[in-house]
Length: 121
Image 1 (tube, rainbow, N blue to C red):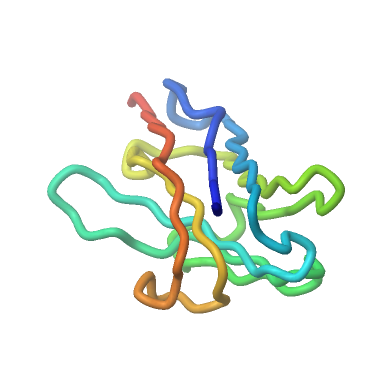
Image 2: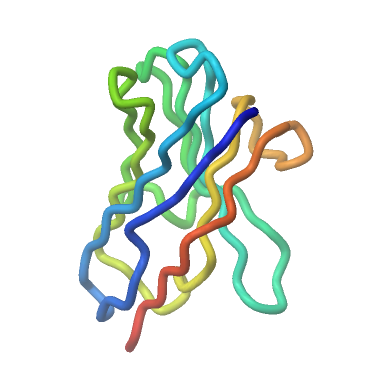
């Protein structure tokens, strides 16, 4: 059974930083690409970032490029999203997903329950 469990969300002021994590089990983590998506109230789920199985390839949404960094620790079966220079428009529930490198959420088979990130102005 595949499980993706996000953690680390919370409330942060604009300009601040936060790191969220996603612990995975039940899949061949070291050969699985993983992505982060987010969904704000009343909006569709949107792509944030994705990382290939080795960690050497990463892709970002234009809205977060230069502020967010996706990384992974294959020994810990965990993927991270370091978020810097946060803006109120980054407020959303953040979900990790496996296993695709697509920006389209329809290509992902597994999803976590999400962690809330709230950025106050």
